[in-house]
Structures are given as C-alpha cells and as structure tokens.
Image 1: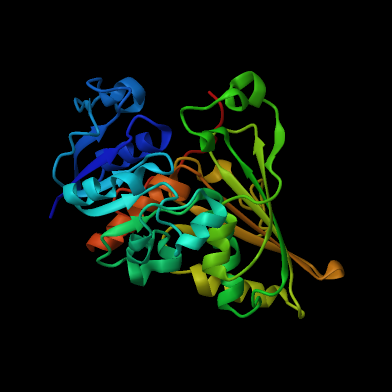
Image 2: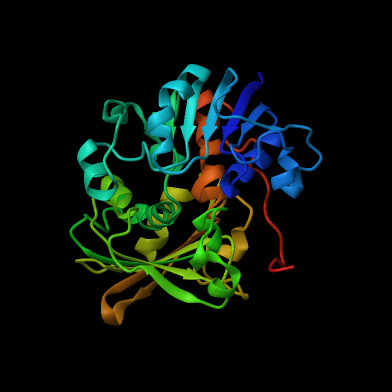
Length: 345
C-alpha cells in the first residue's frame, strides 16, 4: 500500500531532509510541500539534491488531503494550525516542540505556554527505541528534540538495567552543528562567527532538559556547545552511580537494550580511529552510535552518543515513527548507511 504525504515547511533544512527521505521512500508518495517564502518555486530551488523533482512549493494555506502530514515548522506554529493539519491528514507528525511534553504546566515552565493543551495527552513521542509500542496506530506524533534524543539514547540502557534510578548526579555536555539553528540562521550562525568555535550557547536551562526529565525521570546538569560542524549532535554524559558497576554490567545493559534495534550501534572503545561515537560517522543517516567508558577511580561512567541532528534527531526519527504508526517496515526509506571519508567538500 502506498501512502500520500505532505511536508509543511519544506524549504528549511529539516524540511529538506523530509523531502529527501520521502522522495526515495518505497511506501510514500510525496504529494505536497509548502513554503511561504518559496511558493511556486521547485523544491530543487532550495534543495539542490532534489533538482530531479518537478514538485513545487505551494502555500501552507492550501493543504491537500493526504494520509500523513509532516510539519517542519518553528515552535508555536503547529499548535495554532493543528486543526487544519488534522483535517488534511489522518496522521500528523510534528517536528517542532509543540506536542513533545505531557502537560500545560511543563510548557509554562520550559516554553511560552500552550494554546491547545487538551491535545497533549493524545500525542505520542516519536522515538521508537523508547516508545515503539505506543506509536502503533498513533495519529498525532511528536518528534523529539535532537539534544534530548542523543542524551536519552545514551542513558536509557542504564535505567532499563537498574544501574541508575534517577536520583544520581548526571552531567551532560552536548556539542551540536550549525544546522540546529535552522535555515533562517542569524548573526551567531553566520559563517565568519560560527567557524572555528566551541561556544557554550545554553550553559544551563536548555529546553530539551524537559524531555529527559519526562522520559527518564532524571534531572540532569545540561550544557550545550555550538561547534564548527554542520550536521551532528554529540552527547557526553558523566554519570555517578550509587553502587559499583563493572564493564560486564555495561556491556550487558547496552547489548540488552539495543542489539535488536535497527538504527542503534554500540561503539565502545574498539580498534581503529573511530573508537567512540562520532557525528561524522552517522552524518546523513538515521543511525545513532552509543558507547561508554568506565572510570573506577572516580566512581564515574562516561557515556557517549552521536546522531545526525537533522536525521535521527528530527526528520529520520519522524519518518521512522510514521513507519511504525502505519505498520510499514521500520527501516523503509531510511537504509542509507552514510559515507566514509566525509567532511567539508
């Protein structure tokens, strides 16, 4: 069965990744892409890797009826347009933060409130490794934040194996690429200002902490740095468990959690250059790498995770969740394994 799909906000970086995935997806027919600023231009005008397509951007005010609508819009848009989105499609997948959290109180604390709080308990978090069972048949899906996704994937096995309970101290340092700021950019995202930096831009109080708190029951000390790369989010978690933990415990926890997951790979101190997770290794893919190292002298675990922020942290996660929701093969449209070597052209 083929499902029709549309992308609202298709001219941005994440919208472009959605278009790229859906263009090659065996079970989706890309029917519409919207953009206020690029209306009537071909999608290849914004995304040169899609120049082969004749599809043109249309106005978001003129939504076509489709099976699945992907909303790649800034925070605050989807909650205002959700009625139109749901009227146009049986399944809505939102890539903003509008439906990620459970309660109006959380949006009051971490964002600027919420105008449709009655829908929050209907939404399902898109990360299949965390929420697969609840995604089946879901009609309102919220893709997770990229920094939260990297952190949750790194720490989840420690909770499932009862190595952590949620009362421990955990310090998380995340380094992210410039694409996280979106196509609109700004002064801090211009090349002369961004090139060569390791810049703390959210030393405390990052909004993605709310997702970590919600799904792991853990309050983390969380800092995010902007670094000189385009794609990627790399999380280093310093974990101080209450009791002793062995290498065997860690291997058992991570293998037990992820050995059957199609998009998570364990990379923990092997040979060669890429001994631990690196964003460069997963660029352009829906894969996540996770790994760890033991520091017994300081009673510390160091957990590493790396994703492509626009793929596993956004568009790829969204399509993966839609696959699960519709009963499509989970890996459909997401098989790209990446390139090596890769870097700036």
